[in-house]
Image 1 (spheres, rainbow, N blue to C red):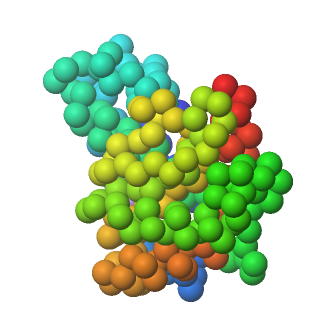
Image 2: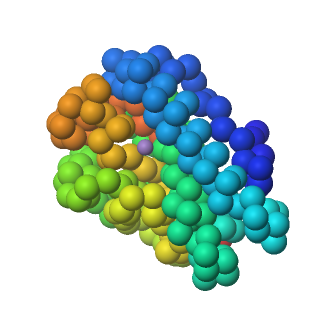
Length: 211
Ligand code: MN
């Protein structure tokens, strides 16, 4: 378990860099994790270096209260804390390819309650992921009552800041798919369903329902 406060360390991938192939290639995962997440982690430490008062805050605490952050460092802290949080969340909710990859249990029931069926949910999720303009993410989040909704964020903004509890996320920055799919976000989303870690999503959903 990596440290959840300053100085932050690069969180390891929970699988090998080539484990998501052929849906996401080893080179994409290497750049995405070892270069991009490392940059966000290093830059978050740099942003916090001169602010000892915030060096004991967890990632979530930093993200939940931007108004408390020092005015001069708010932008770099939020950008990089978001980049660290979002990437760890995204990577932790992927796994090696599974045939007939589907949610189960309470998460599947909640998905059916909102969308009618898993297939309809996939359709809605893809439509909304396609609509994220520029760089960002599409999230499945739970609100305070445990109800699911789709939630787009731009850049490295995160639903945590807006009071929502993340269940699942797709990174739709072009760096997540350009080497494998060029500009074809649609093909990347279709491939991504094969490597969604529904067990992790179920755990996240159950954790959301506790608050
Ligand atoms: Mn990314």
